[in-house]
Length: 87
Image (cartoon, rainbow, N blue to C red):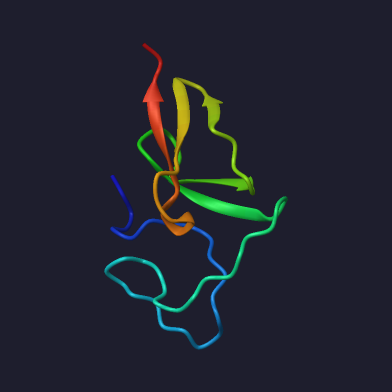
């Protein structure tokens, strides 16, 4: 069960910048994420709803029962992990 329809992720946005509740992102310009900076990526499936990591995030994270694979085919604010069960 998902707790919210909006994915969880870390963004740095300008103060007083409204968040679009339909997309979970700000229409304002997001700042650049520096190497080594901590970030939280939302997870689709598996035992977690989010994974704390650093930029750039690892391509795969092994957990009990499977592996989280990074989905990075869009803007940085839409990156997330998808769970792939051991087969």
